[in-house]
Picture: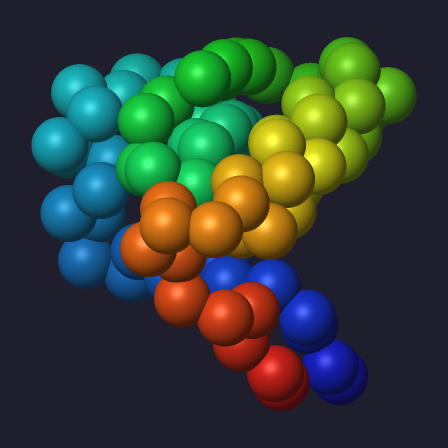
Length: 77
């Protein structure tokens, strides 16, 4: 299987504990600067989650294309 984006694997629950998370599933959406921009706890809201992902990716692409920002080129997988 090929996944074209980064996925956090938290088998030791370090991220879970760092976020003081008590929910399953818990989705945390971070922007290209690593800031948490949205979260969702529980099942559902799949369309909203997809829209948030698409928005964050679009923002990252716009930022990447601006000269002088210092963004690294998009990784190739």
